[in-house]
Image: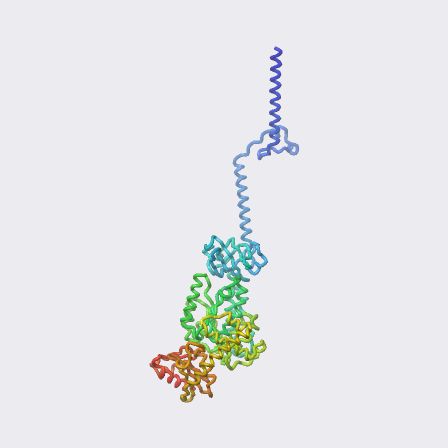
Length: 589
């Protein structure tokens, strides 16, 4: 049937067209599909492949081959990470002195932890290397100690970014590692070598030619090295001196030299108050009261602020056997002790302290040397940049018999005799009030800022107060002849204002200068349970006390202050004590 045949042909053609369309769509899909790992690359001609091989479906790769490729990729990643770790380990270390030019850079530094302080935000580690000191801040969360295992004295490596905060450089710590073993030893040796090179001065150049100063050149170098090393090690320095004009001059001279070194070494604005303390002493004995005060403070600072134990520098104090108990207490805790004194020191003290500067122990006659002159020379050994600043101080420290070379030196720097006297009197007055305070800024204004108005005003008060006391004292002096000596005795308990200026020691000094006659003369200021003794010749005060104690065994006589000429006794044996002391002094003459 023609109709059926046409229909069949039509269906056949349709089926054929459908198959062709399907084939076309399939080809188009293959062209649009991205090639996969199993696709065959169309490079038949280049590889001499047959069409049959090119048209053949690629076989799937075995599972073991895929696993091998995954393992290889993993190995590659581990190798990259290992290379990165090696690169980090081999990062170049920079010195802290160079970080000024590295703001914004991530750097690596190594050194010793000098201090740790916890703020309300980060923990701040003060790091010291062979060139400088810098703060490194590490943050966990507000007020929480970062790296609690790190302690003062640890050698560490720190990686972090250099930033400037409130005008000060700081390293924002990204990683901190404690170094031990060979790495720690390397850093320790590096710092030790740098300290030795930097801390010890090449030589001491005295302010003026003076034989007793020249005699202690080596020990002055040792003392200067100890002070400079303390600054470089971030070790606090505690200076103790007598509350007298001579003592304040000595302390101020060393202070003038050390503070610039601290400012240069430490980035903190308050570092000069944190690392240097000057505490006047009422007398030249470094007794248990002063030592207990110092030990209490240093242990509190160690426990609360991780501070190192301080270097204690004693100027014109601590050189006699009466100070052994106090010095020994410091020694128990390992605090370094340096004593500088112009008067003869006892052998026991030399064995107890780390450094002793004392002309008498070098065989020099130091009767014309003041502690202020000796300490001023020490100050220029510590920091020669302050030479011009302190050149007038030796002359200021003498009440009388100042060597001419020191007077000439002061005048060459603009301080004539009247100016020197005003400074001495002003310092003596200020030394008396608030005697346990250093009065750092006030003393600096008087001695270094050349404020003539201030010095003149204070020295005028000094003279008014002193003259009132001297006038009363001279009117009530008892003149006596005892053996070969003449004596002037003042009942200071009855005829002086005991709790106002001047103090008894300064009063008896001035009274002795004004009343002495001849070569065998003594002046005594007699109190309720103590007396002050001054003599025109050399008196061995210990020998006087020993002899007097034999003469008046019930008086309880004791040498309370060798340097001040102060002798204590029992209140009820006042008259017996005076008679015994005068007799013993006469025996020496």
